[in-house]
Amino acid sequence: MKWSAIIALTCTFLLMAYSAVELPHFADPNARIHQHVSPRFIEKAVEETHAPNQVTAVLADYRGFDTMFETIVILIAGLAVAMILWPAHREEDP
Image (cartoon, rainbow, N blue to C red):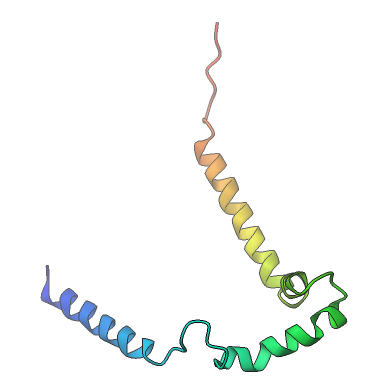
């Protein structure tokens, strides 16, 4: 291995380890994400969107474009796999 690669990987690891110290603990109710947006979604999701439940309200209404484009990406990936696996030509039996 080249020393430059080892040094780059070591620096990257140290930077990630230093950054991970600042992350909130897993399932911490006092994390910043749970203090700002989550309470509003919990309190007003059904009222604002008239969706049957909160999950549907967030995925279909608040994150509608994001969910739509994720679905399109999955569809395109599935079509690409199908095209790769589909035989290019079929041999006919005489």
